[in-house]
Amino acid sequence: MNALASAMATGLGALLRASEEAEFDPNSVTPGVVGFVITFLVAVATVLIVIDMNRRVRRTRYREEIREKLAAEQTAVQTAEQTADESSKPE
Image 1 (cartoon, rainbow, N blue to C red):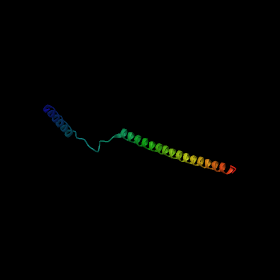
Image 2 (image 1 turned 90 degrees about the vertical axis):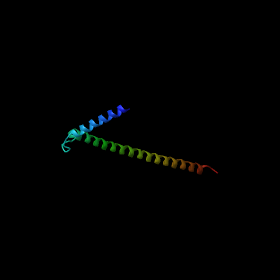
Image 3 (image 1 turned 30 degrees about the vertical axis):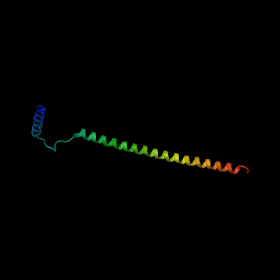
Image 4 (image 1 turned 120 degrees about the horizontal axis):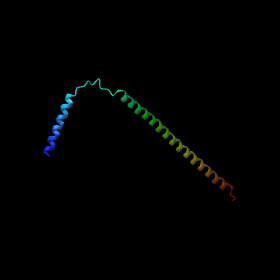
């Protein structure tokens, strides 16, 4: 266990020294054209997915409204038929 701890400490020390030695200008480090293109494609894909989702939700909502209207019409027809049957029966 002690050997593992000393190996980890040695590795961590080497990592810290390497990060201190790496000097770079943060203003010159950029993602470049590839980063811009990938970010743009992700944004376009997101917009397309949102548009498709809205279309599907709207279609589902309209289908439900049509089902409700058809059910109401069927109920009205059945009620009218029952009323007509009762009124046409001789007493």
